[in-house]
Image 1: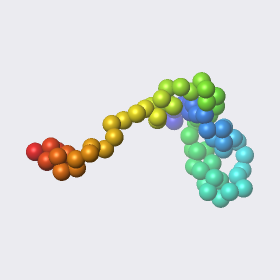
Image 2: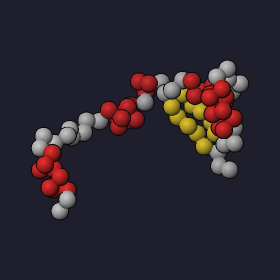
Image 3: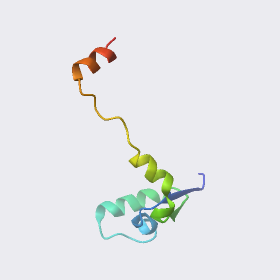
Image 4: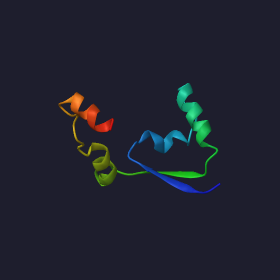
Length: 75
């Protein structure tokens, strides 16, 4: 396998692969992750700007005229 690093602002992932979990679902995830050689690094939310921008980036809203939209994409 290849060593890799997971960078996340999701704090619970930091300890997910460190100790047994009380929750069965989390324990199954922890056991699944053990097959990988990974390091989990926590990034403070304020320093994690690019993923936050990408997940919150504005996109075009739905078109007002559904019939017109259907005609354009069905050509």
